[in-house]
Image 1 (tube, rainbow, N blue to C red):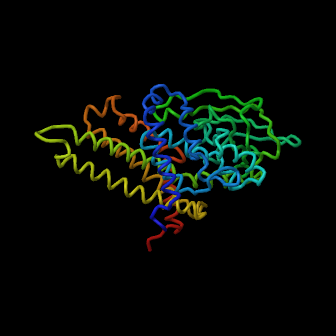
Image 2 (image 1 turned 180 degrees about the horizontal axis):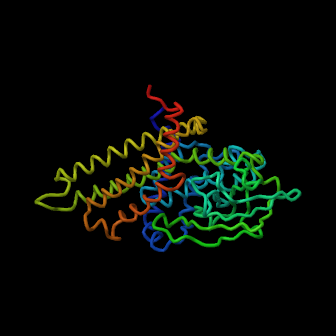
Image 3 (image 1 turned 45 degrees about the vertical axis):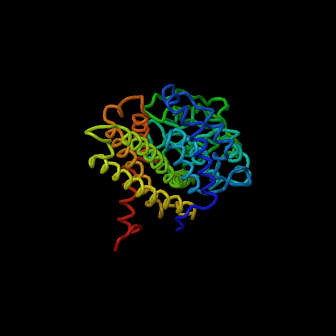
Length: 386
Protein backbone atom coordinates (compact mmCIF):
# COMPACT_ATOMS: atom_id res chain seq x y z
CA UNK A 1 0.00 0.00 0.00
CA UNK A 2 1.32 3.43 -0.97
CA UNK A 3 1.00 5.90 1.89
CA UNK A 4 2.53 8.92 0.16
CA UNK A 5 -0.16 11.11 -1.42
CA UNK A 6 -0.08 11.27 -5.20
CA UNK A 7 -0.12 14.54 -7.10
CA UNK A 8 -3.82 13.96 -7.81
CA UNK A 9 -4.55 13.51 -4.11
CA UNK A 10 -2.69 16.72 -3.29
CA UNK A 11 -4.60 18.69 -5.93
CA UNK A 12 -7.93 17.34 -4.71
CA UNK A 13 -7.05 18.10 -1.08
CA UNK A 14 -6.07 21.65 -2.02
CA UNK A 15 -9.32 22.17 -3.95
CA UNK A 16 -11.41 20.82 -1.08
CA UNK A 17 -9.51 22.93 1.45
CA UNK A 18 -10.13 26.06 -0.62
CA UNK A 19 -13.88 25.38 -0.88
CA UNK A 20 -14.00 24.62 2.85
CA UNK A 21 -12.24 27.86 3.73
CA UNK A 22 -13.96 30.21 1.28
CA UNK A 23 -17.52 28.84 1.08
CA UNK A 24 -18.33 26.30 3.78
CA UNK A 25 -16.67 27.60 6.96
CA UNK A 26 -18.28 31.07 6.82
CA UNK A 27 -21.75 29.52 6.46
CA UNK A 28 -21.56 26.37 8.58
CA UNK A 29 -23.13 27.79 11.74
CA UNK A 30 -25.98 29.43 9.79
CA UNK A 31 -26.68 26.26 7.81
CA UNK A 32 -26.88 24.29 11.04
CA UNK A 33 -29.17 26.86 12.65
CA UNK A 34 -31.59 27.20 9.74
CA UNK A 35 -31.40 23.60 8.42
CA UNK A 36 -31.73 25.04 4.91
CA UNK A 37 -30.07 23.08 2.11
CA UNK A 38 -26.86 24.98 1.19
CA UNK A 39 -27.06 25.21 -2.58
CA UNK A 40 -23.91 27.35 -2.49
CA UNK A 41 -21.98 24.39 -1.04
CA UNK A 42 -23.21 22.19 -3.88
CA UNK A 43 -22.33 24.69 -6.59
CA UNK A 44 -18.87 25.34 -5.13
CA UNK A 45 -18.17 21.60 -4.94
CA UNK A 46 -19.44 21.19 -8.51
CA UNK A 47 -17.21 23.97 -9.82
CA UNK A 48 -14.24 22.36 -8.05
CA UNK A 49 -15.04 18.96 -9.65
CA UNK A 50 -15.49 17.34 -6.24
CA UNK A 51 -18.89 15.71 -6.78
CA UNK A 52 -17.84 12.88 -9.08
CA UNK A 53 -14.42 11.95 -7.72
CA UNK A 54 -14.97 8.18 -7.96
CA UNK A 55 -17.15 8.25 -11.07
CA UNK A 56 -16.03 7.39 -14.62
CA UNK A 57 -14.15 10.02 -16.56
CA UNK A 58 -16.10 9.08 -19.70
CA UNK A 59 -19.29 10.55 -18.23
CA UNK A 60 -17.79 13.59 -16.54
CA UNK A 61 -16.33 12.20 -13.32
CA UNK A 62 -12.74 12.44 -12.16
CA UNK A 63 -12.17 8.68 -11.81
CA UNK A 64 -9.62 9.53 -9.10
CA UNK A 65 -10.63 6.75 -6.69
CA UNK A 66 -12.03 6.27 -3.23
CA UNK A 67 -8.89 7.42 -1.43
CA UNK A 68 -9.05 10.72 -3.30
CA UNK A 69 -12.67 11.12 -2.25
CA UNK A 70 -11.75 10.31 1.36
CA UNK A 71 -9.14 13.07 1.28
CA UNK A 72 -11.69 15.59 -0.03
CA UNK A 73 -14.27 14.53 2.54
CA UNK A 74 -11.75 15.01 5.36
CA UNK A 75 -11.07 18.60 4.36
CA UNK A 76 -14.68 19.78 4.10
CA UNK A 77 -15.81 17.77 7.16
CA UNK A 78 -13.28 19.69 9.26
CA UNK A 79 -15.67 22.64 9.12
CA UNK A 80 -19.05 21.01 8.36
CA UNK A 81 -19.84 17.30 8.43
CA UNK A 82 -22.85 17.96 6.18
CA UNK A 83 -20.48 18.99 3.41
CA UNK A 84 -18.59 15.73 3.80
CA UNK A 85 -21.84 13.85 3.25
CA UNK A 86 -22.59 16.00 0.22
CA UNK A 87 -19.29 14.95 -1.39
CA UNK A 88 -19.95 11.31 -0.55
CA UNK A 89 -23.56 11.30 -1.74
CA UNK A 90 -22.63 11.52 -5.40
CA UNK A 91 -20.95 8.12 -5.05
CA UNK A 92 -23.49 6.55 -2.67
CA UNK A 93 -26.33 7.35 -5.06
CA UNK A 94 -24.58 6.03 -8.17
CA UNK A 95 -22.13 3.25 -7.22
CA UNK A 96 -24.86 0.62 -7.69
CA UNK A 97 -25.19 1.76 -11.30
CA UNK A 98 -21.43 2.18 -11.76
CA UNK A 99 -20.75 -1.37 -10.52
CA UNK A 100 -23.72 -3.24 -12.00
CA UNK A 101 -25.42 -1.07 -14.60
CA UNK A 102 -25.15 -1.13 -18.38
CA UNK A 103 -23.01 1.44 -20.26
CA UNK A 104 -26.22 3.18 -21.30
CA UNK A 105 -27.40 3.38 -17.67
CA UNK A 106 -24.03 4.77 -16.58
CA UNK A 107 -24.25 7.44 -19.28
CA UNK A 108 -27.88 8.35 -18.50
CA UNK A 109 -27.91 8.18 -14.71
CA UNK A 110 -24.32 8.45 -13.44
CA UNK A 111 -23.16 11.16 -15.84
CA UNK A 112 -25.54 13.93 -14.72
CA UNK A 113 -24.64 13.30 -11.06
CA UNK A 114 -20.90 13.24 -11.81
CA UNK A 115 -21.20 16.57 -13.61
CA UNK A 116 -23.32 18.16 -10.89
CA UNK A 117 -26.32 18.54 -13.19
CA UNK A 118 -28.51 16.40 -10.93
CA UNK A 119 -28.70 15.56 -7.25
CA UNK A 120 -29.37 11.94 -6.35
CA UNK A 121 -30.07 9.70 -3.36
CA UNK A 122 -29.81 6.06 -2.27
CA UNK A 123 -33.10 4.59 -1.02
CA UNK A 124 -32.76 1.47 1.08
CA UNK A 125 -33.95 2.05 4.68
CA UNK A 126 -37.65 1.68 5.53
CA UNK A 127 -39.71 2.36 8.68
CA UNK A 128 -39.48 -1.32 9.66
CA UNK A 129 -36.20 -2.33 8.00
CA UNK A 130 -32.83 -0.63 8.14
CA UNK A 131 -29.94 -2.84 9.11
CA UNK A 132 -32.14 -5.86 8.28
CA UNK A 133 -32.02 -5.51 4.51
CA UNK A 134 -33.77 -8.85 4.01
CA UNK A 135 -36.78 -7.41 5.85
CA UNK A 136 -37.52 -4.71 3.27
CA UNK A 137 -41.20 -4.47 2.35
CA UNK A 138 -40.95 -2.33 -0.79
CA UNK A 139 -42.30 -4.16 -3.82
CA UNK A 140 -42.02 -3.87 -7.58
CA UNK A 141 -44.57 -5.55 -9.87
CA UNK A 142 -43.97 -6.18 -13.57
CA UNK A 143 -46.54 -4.69 -15.93
CA UNK A 144 -45.48 -5.19 -19.52
CA UNK A 145 -42.40 -3.09 -20.21
CA UNK A 146 -42.71 -1.28 -16.88
CA UNK A 147 -42.31 -1.92 -13.18
CA UNK A 148 -44.78 -0.52 -10.66
CA UNK A 149 -43.08 0.39 -7.39
CA UNK A 150 -44.86 0.69 -4.07
CA UNK A 151 -42.63 1.67 -1.15
CA UNK A 152 -41.95 4.00 1.71
CA UNK A 153 -38.31 4.81 2.39
CA UNK A 154 -37.09 6.54 5.53
CA UNK A 155 -34.05 8.59 6.65
CA UNK A 156 -32.96 9.06 3.03
CA UNK A 157 -29.97 11.41 2.95
CA UNK A 158 -30.48 14.05 0.29
CA UNK A 159 -33.83 12.54 -0.63
CA UNK A 160 -35.88 15.73 -0.19
CA UNK A 161 -33.72 17.59 -2.74
CA UNK A 162 -32.95 14.70 -5.13
CA UNK A 163 -33.69 14.74 -8.86
CA UNK A 164 -33.29 10.96 -9.10
CA UNK A 165 -33.03 8.09 -6.67
CA UNK A 166 -31.95 4.47 -6.73
CA UNK A 167 -34.58 2.46 -4.88
CA UNK A 168 -34.48 -1.16 -3.74
CA UNK A 169 -37.66 -3.26 -3.84
CA UNK A 170 -38.65 -6.94 -3.95
CA UNK A 171 -40.08 -8.36 -7.13
CA UNK A 172 -41.53 -11.27 -5.13
CA UNK A 173 -43.10 -10.27 -1.79
CA UNK A 174 -41.55 -12.17 1.12
CA UNK A 175 -38.61 -13.45 -0.91
CA UNK A 176 -35.43 -11.61 0.14
CA UNK A 177 -33.57 -13.07 -2.83
CA UNK A 178 -35.85 -11.16 -5.20
CA UNK A 179 -34.50 -7.74 -4.21
CA UNK A 180 -33.91 -5.49 -7.22
CA UNK A 181 -32.75 -1.91 -7.84
CA UNK A 182 -34.45 0.75 -9.96
CA UNK A 183 -33.57 4.30 -10.98
CA UNK A 184 -36.53 6.63 -10.41
CA UNK A 185 -36.92 10.23 -11.56
CA UNK A 186 -38.42 12.19 -8.67
CA UNK A 187 -40.80 14.01 -11.02
CA UNK A 188 -42.52 10.66 -11.68
CA UNK A 189 -46.26 10.52 -10.83
CA UNK A 190 -46.75 8.84 -7.47
CA UNK A 191 -43.41 9.94 -6.01
CA UNK A 192 -43.67 12.22 -3.00
CA UNK A 193 -41.42 13.63 -0.29
CA UNK A 194 -43.81 12.83 2.55
CA UNK A 195 -41.84 14.54 5.29
CA UNK A 196 -38.48 16.12 6.07
CA UNK A 197 -36.79 15.04 9.29
CA UNK A 198 -36.00 17.30 12.23
CA UNK A 199 -32.53 16.15 13.13
CA UNK A 200 -30.07 16.42 16.00
CA UNK A 201 -27.18 17.17 13.63
CA UNK A 202 -25.91 17.10 10.03
CA UNK A 203 -28.69 19.59 9.34
CA UNK A 204 -27.21 20.92 6.12
CA UNK A 205 -28.16 17.83 4.15
CA UNK A 206 -31.82 16.95 4.65
CA UNK A 207 -33.16 13.46 5.23
CA UNK A 208 -36.77 12.48 4.93
CA UNK A 209 -39.50 9.98 4.14
CA UNK A 210 -39.98 9.24 0.44
CA UNK A 211 -43.19 7.58 -0.73
CA UNK A 212 -43.56 5.62 -3.97
CA UNK A 213 -47.27 5.18 -4.67
CA UNK A 214 -47.43 2.87 -7.70
CA UNK A 215 -44.61 4.71 -9.42
CA UNK A 216 -44.09 3.40 -12.95
CA UNK A 217 -40.53 2.82 -14.10
CA UNK A 218 -39.44 1.55 -17.55
CA UNK A 219 -37.81 -1.88 -17.52
CA UNK A 220 -34.56 -0.40 -18.79
CA UNK A 221 -34.25 1.49 -15.49
CA UNK A 222 -33.86 -1.75 -13.55
CA UNK A 223 -30.19 -2.14 -12.60
CA UNK A 224 -28.50 -5.55 -12.58
CA UNK A 225 -31.50 -7.84 -13.04
CA UNK A 226 -34.32 -9.12 -10.85
CA UNK A 227 -32.38 -10.96 -8.16
CA UNK A 228 -29.14 -9.10 -7.51
CA UNK A 229 -30.36 -6.35 -5.22
CA UNK A 230 -28.89 -7.71 -1.99
CA UNK A 231 -25.44 -8.09 -3.51
CA UNK A 232 -25.67 -4.66 -5.13
CA UNK A 233 -26.83 -2.89 -1.98
CA UNK A 234 -24.10 -4.44 0.17
CA UNK A 235 -21.38 -3.74 -2.42
CA UNK A 236 -22.46 -0.11 -2.59
CA UNK A 237 -22.51 0.26 1.19
CA UNK A 238 -19.16 -1.52 1.58
CA UNK A 239 -17.53 0.72 -1.01
CA UNK A 240 -18.50 3.85 0.93
CA UNK A 241 -17.97 2.74 4.54
CA UNK A 242 -14.38 4.03 4.68
CA UNK A 243 -15.67 7.39 3.48
CA UNK A 244 -18.09 7.60 6.40
CA UNK A 245 -14.95 7.05 8.45
CA UNK A 246 -13.30 9.92 6.53
CA UNK A 247 -16.14 12.18 7.65
CA UNK A 248 -15.29 11.17 11.22
CA UNK A 249 -11.57 11.80 10.74
CA UNK A 250 -12.19 15.23 9.25
CA UNK A 251 -14.63 16.20 11.99
CA UNK A 252 -12.18 15.08 14.68
CA UNK A 253 -9.32 16.99 13.08
CA UNK A 254 -11.41 20.15 12.94
CA UNK A 255 -12.53 19.78 16.56
CA UNK A 256 -8.98 19.12 17.77
CA UNK A 257 -7.54 22.11 15.92
CA UNK A 258 -10.23 24.38 17.35
CA UNK A 259 -9.72 23.12 20.91
CA UNK A 260 -5.93 23.44 20.58
CA UNK A 261 -6.12 27.03 19.36
CA UNK A 262 -8.46 27.88 22.22
CA UNK A 263 -6.16 26.20 24.74
CA UNK A 264 -3.20 28.21 23.45
CA UNK A 265 -5.00 31.46 24.29
CA UNK A 266 -7.06 30.61 27.37
CA UNK A 267 -5.25 31.54 30.58
CA UNK A 268 -5.71 29.67 33.85
CA UNK A 269 -3.56 28.90 36.91
CA UNK A 270 -0.89 31.40 35.91
CA UNK A 271 -0.44 30.17 32.32
CA UNK A 272 -2.28 28.91 29.27
CA UNK A 273 -4.29 25.70 29.17
CA UNK A 274 -1.57 24.13 27.02
CA UNK A 275 0.78 24.42 30.01
CA UNK A 276 -1.40 21.98 31.96
CA UNK A 277 -0.49 18.31 31.71
CA UNK A 278 -4.15 17.29 31.98
CA UNK A 279 -4.89 19.25 28.79
CA UNK A 280 -1.70 18.08 27.09
CA UNK A 281 -2.67 14.45 27.65
CA UNK A 282 -6.15 15.05 26.24
CA UNK A 283 -4.70 16.62 23.12
CA UNK A 284 -2.14 13.84 22.72
CA UNK A 285 -4.80 11.14 23.05
CA UNK A 286 -6.95 12.94 20.49
CA UNK A 287 -4.05 13.00 18.04
CA UNK A 288 -3.26 9.32 18.63
CA UNK A 289 -6.85 8.35 17.90
CA UNK A 290 -7.06 10.54 14.78
CA UNK A 291 -3.86 9.11 13.32
CA UNK A 292 -4.93 5.52 14.01
CA UNK A 293 -8.34 6.14 12.43
CA UNK A 294 -6.80 7.87 9.44
CA UNK A 295 -4.62 4.85 8.68
CA UNK A 296 -7.60 2.49 8.89
CA UNK A 297 -9.68 4.77 6.68
CA UNK A 298 -6.92 5.15 4.09
CA UNK A 299 -6.39 1.39 4.09
CA UNK A 300 -10.13 0.88 3.62
CA UNK A 301 -10.22 3.36 0.72
CA UNK A 302 -7.23 1.61 -0.85
CA UNK A 303 -8.98 -1.77 -0.56
CA UNK A 304 -12.03 -0.40 -2.36
CA UNK A 305 -9.83 1.04 -5.10
CA UNK A 306 -8.27 -2.43 -5.44
CA UNK A 307 -11.76 -3.88 -5.98
CA UNK A 308 -11.88 -5.51 -2.55
CA UNK A 309 -15.33 -4.54 -1.32
CA UNK A 310 -17.11 -7.89 -1.61
CA UNK A 311 -18.34 -10.14 1.23
CA UNK A 312 -14.89 -11.62 1.89
CA UNK A 313 -13.29 -8.17 2.27
CA UNK A 314 -16.05 -6.19 3.93
CA UNK A 315 -14.83 -6.75 7.48
CA UNK A 316 -11.84 -4.42 7.07
CA UNK A 317 -14.13 -1.72 5.70
CA UNK A 318 -16.30 -2.25 8.78
CA UNK A 319 -13.23 -1.95 11.02
CA UNK A 320 -12.39 1.41 9.45
CA UNK A 321 -15.96 2.67 9.67
CA UNK A 322 -16.56 1.58 13.27
CA UNK A 323 -13.26 2.82 14.67
CA UNK A 324 -13.20 6.17 12.88
CA UNK A 325 -16.80 7.11 13.65
CA UNK A 326 -16.56 6.14 17.31
CA UNK A 327 -13.25 7.99 17.51
CA UNK A 328 -14.96 11.13 16.18
CA UNK A 329 -17.48 10.97 19.01
CA UNK A 330 -14.75 10.61 21.64
CA UNK A 331 -12.62 13.40 20.20
CA UNK A 332 -15.55 15.80 19.82
CA UNK A 333 -16.45 15.15 23.46
CA UNK A 334 -12.90 15.79 24.64
CA UNK A 335 -12.69 18.98 22.59
CA UNK A 336 -15.75 20.31 24.40
CA UNK A 337 -14.18 19.32 27.71
CA UNK A 338 -11.06 21.36 26.95
CA UNK A 339 -13.19 24.45 26.42
CA UNK A 340 -15.25 23.72 29.51
CA UNK A 341 -18.44 25.76 29.70
CA UNK A 342 -17.52 27.63 26.52
CA UNK A 343 -17.52 24.38 24.57
CA UNK A 344 -21.15 23.80 25.48
CA UNK A 345 -22.19 27.14 23.97
CA UNK A 346 -23.36 27.72 20.43
CA UNK A 347 -20.80 30.52 20.17
CA UNK A 348 -18.28 27.79 19.34
CA UNK A 349 -18.56 25.05 16.68
CA UNK A 350 -17.75 22.17 19.01
CA UNK A 351 -21.31 21.51 20.16
CA UNK A 352 -22.24 21.24 16.47
CA UNK A 353 -19.35 18.84 15.81
CA UNK A 354 -20.51 16.77 18.78
CA UNK A 355 -24.08 16.54 17.47
CA UNK A 356 -22.89 15.79 13.94
CA UNK A 357 -20.50 13.07 15.12
CA UNK A 358 -23.31 11.09 16.70
CA UNK A 359 -24.90 10.43 13.31
CA UNK A 360 -21.80 8.66 12.02
CA UNK A 361 -22.20 5.65 14.31
CA UNK A 362 -25.64 4.95 12.82
CA UNK A 363 -25.52 5.62 9.07
CA UNK A 364 -24.19 3.08 6.53
CA UNK A 365 -24.70 0.34 9.10
CA UNK A 366 -24.64 0.91 12.85
CA UNK A 367 -21.58 0.21 14.97
CA UNK A 368 -23.33 -2.96 16.10
CA UNK A 369 -23.78 -4.15 12.51
CA UNK A 370 -20.10 -3.46 11.82
CA UNK A 371 -19.17 -5.61 14.81
CA UNK A 372 -21.43 -8.38 13.58
CA UNK A 373 -19.61 -8.33 10.23
CA UNK A 374 -16.19 -8.31 11.91
CA UNK A 375 -17.11 -11.12 14.30
CA UNK A 376 -18.40 -13.27 11.42
CA UNK A 377 -15.11 -12.73 9.58
CA UNK A 378 -13.22 -13.93 12.66
CA UNK A 379 -15.45 -16.98 13.09
CA UNK A 380 -15.22 -17.87 9.37
CA UNK A 381 -11.45 -17.20 9.43
CA UNK A 382 -11.60 -14.50 6.77
CA UNK A 383 -9.89 -12.45 9.48
CA UNK A 384 -7.31 -14.51 11.29
CA UNK A 385 -4.43 -13.90 13.70
CA UNK A 386 -3.27 -17.50 13.71
